[in-house]
Length: 226
Ligand SMILES: CCCCC/C=C\C/C=C\C/C=C\C/C=C\CCCC(=O)SCCNC(=O)CCNC(=O)[C@H](O)C(C)(C)COP(=O)(O)OP(=O)(O)OC[C@H]1O[C@@H](n2cnc3c(N)ncnc32)[C@H](O)[C@@H]1OP(=O)(O)O
Image (cartoon, rainbow, N blue to C red; front, side, top):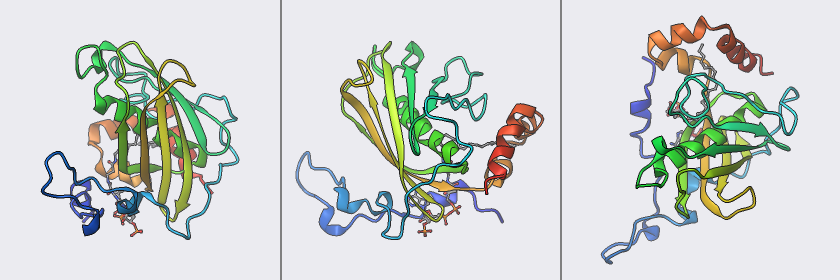
């Protein structure tokens, strides 16, 4: 039987070392420090990520991977409409303008929406390697509130690859591309086959995607990855 995502999330992969835990103190957290995040640290045999020979040139827009994607699709009125551009090496930049539909508190972006913007930007890195990958782990830091109307200037880079595991980090600045960092994230993406989508996605959307020539073109580009 195919393994479903629900089982995969129950495996308790991230073990927090006992000495990293703090307990019994009011206001203390159990948050592990960097030594307690082994899954976000590349193993010693990890290699530097390689850009695919056909990757878009630095400065080129990557385009949406799916019209109905909440992060990058053009087809959703309340989506993020995040537009990512290739940068040097395996890195990208992206911009996202916070809309009223993205609020959490009055006039401020919802943290989950900001995490989505980071996730989407990190996910777009995979296009530069022509690898299909999904987020396994995403750790976000929220450093400053982000008002509605702000442009979030995002940048992300892939730092290492070990087998199917892809390590990357991203940050989002406000007030300009060189403004203060408002959000940042580290992520572990896991490479998957196209079957991940065709076997797990709801059949009606899969059927619609497969009958859309533009979508099939995107899927094929991944399949011919050497
Ligand atoms: C015709 C239709 C075509 C449509 C599609 C067309 C084109 C597609 C193109 C692009 C689209 C791709 C992505 C979308 C892009 C951007 C959106 C943003 C990205 C996302 O938003 S995407 C959604 C959220 N995402 C998920 O929906 C994942 C749910 N999940 C799973 O589906 C499984 O969980 C999976 C596959 C991740 C792994 O499952 P698996 O069985 O394949 O592999 P396994 O479990 O063996 O893990 C292998 C090694 O990764 C380590 N590992 C795994 N997970 C870990 C974790 N959480 N923490 C620490 N380590 C972890 C293990 O420890 C092991 O490590 P080791 O090898 O060292 O032992």
